[in-house]
Length: 87
Image (cartoon, rainbow, N blue to C red):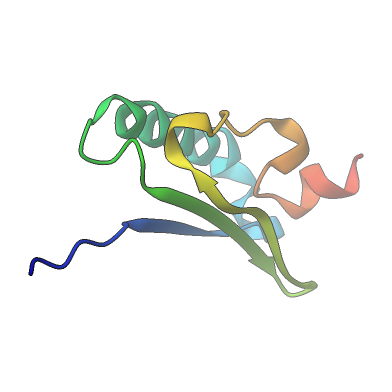
């Protein structure tokens, strides 16, 4: 009997103030990864989670979503304390 499993991708992002300078690059990189993974037939059914952290704590902003349904991250989920505090 063969064993099959599901891939679970979990990205962990630093949203501390020191990351502000590369916030847009980080968001773009995550969105590029999501788009390319959704096109990969071997991974389109995988699971996706994303966690952000800072000195204020840890927050799961995406949890166990099916990769083919994952939407790009937006400004409300940006990995930066400065961005988060401006909401």
